[in-house]
Length: 142
Image (cartoon, rainbow, N blue to C red; front, side, top):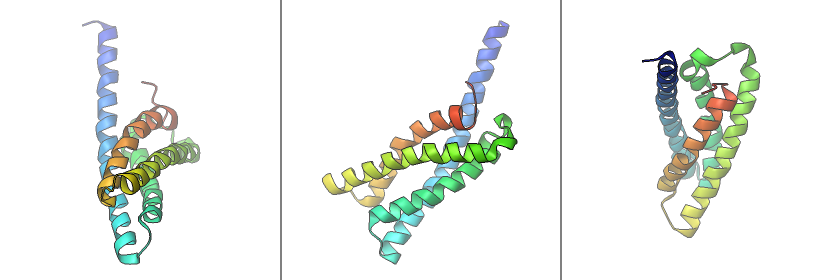
């Protein structure tokens, strides 16, 4: 195996490691998100759309903290934490727009149960967020 092949294999391994951790963090974010969505809608009585916007907002910060200190710990310059957080929130706002648009269409047009619609919308936005955050927010070049 050549040095170039080893480097490529190392970068692919790092990508896979980051992806696995990112989606594990995302799974915890899904639990926070869906738990708050259900609680705010069913017990507080908020409209599902407003509940979902609040739930996404809370999960954004929990996901950032876990990704910063666990997923991308080996790739991060900790001096730039505020800049990274602003970038993460910016990307998350894009994801939030995708999620809110998706849930609204799924519930209002296709009459899908709001909890299932939320899970579908999370899946749609998750892959987009991973690619952008890995490269732009956390500065991983490959």
